[in-house]
Length: 472
Image 1 (cartoon, rainbow, N blue to C red):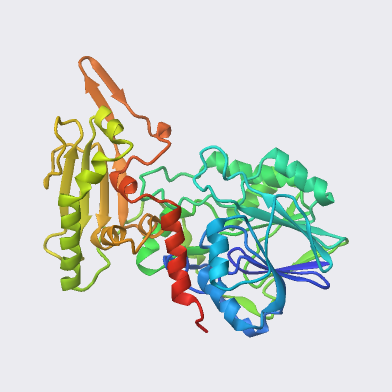
Image 2 (cartoon, helix red, strand yellow):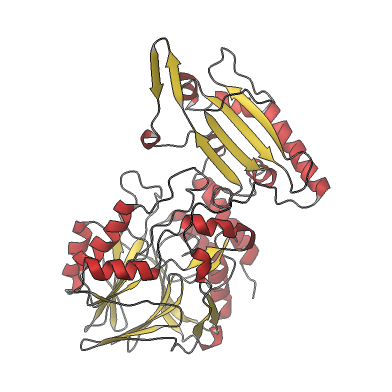
């Protein structure tokens, strides 16, 4: 028999008769650049969590790979056994973070290569997120666990195709219990002016995967967080379905698969004869408050204005002085060296950059423009009367990008950066436009000037390592 307990979001405690597995621990608010909190909120008694034989990390998204929790576990000396096996993907940044936190006994996993620990066989299942036009280029894995009698599969965030499903079933036969993807997150759509409807094709794949895998029992998997405090308006724009809706759709789509809700503190008991879920029966975690009502998807509600998060007036003016110096003395040089300069020129782009100040300031924003259709390019501090490509950003976030103290993970997800484009080109008797679906790379000058690359991602994590390492 295997038990699975949901601690929060994607964090599961999986227990066989002899082996305890912990997955993707994220135990502290706030998470993901301190933008999000767990939802529903939980009460977690860490002293009652049983010792762990295996720690599994699926991938490096911060709602799965939380440096603060990992640093705490390393210092705790109780939950992770001295010989605890750390299973991780072949991701240089993630592995470097583990080394910096002084984790030992790390095993780099490979697709469908089984690992036997205690009385269980653990098999990483691949994700196709690195194929095609997927945004994330780093590896990630789902997780098969078999104790000789039953098999569970945690899909985590993996993208699965029919070949992967066939291979999953070939490993141990029919899956007994599956934690499946249920909500396509729209994080970032707000900043990039993308559609807010449910991505029907992607959502349909979630249902198709469960039908193809055909588990005896399925529950909704990881997606248990929300935006906090001043970012909360983004909840209306980011979560286009719910556990309840998914379960209704799943029951209609594949009625042969039993299913039920699954929340923090719920414990699933999976045996070859019976599967049942004991609600809120965990001795170490419970739902503190069901605050999920704030996730209601209504992408027509009020939108918070862009405002700098620097409260001090003198500090704000110092930041604005730095921004003005960069825009007026360095920005054009960066644009002229860009690989997409000729694209901006070809499409006769008129670009506007708007930088927003503090709440209550008499001067709310400052505007600079560049006409890429002009014979001589220059940055002008004025509105040119036409906008093909727009970027609006808070002074605090822009200053952070200039001085490398922040990353796009924070800037693009906190509502303080917004962009849109209406790119077209007019020549004599001819009108051309650039369809948004053909844009395979970012055209925004700030995104190009401060690239969202491996170096930025690495520094984001290492900043957390410096903050949390050796902290009790």
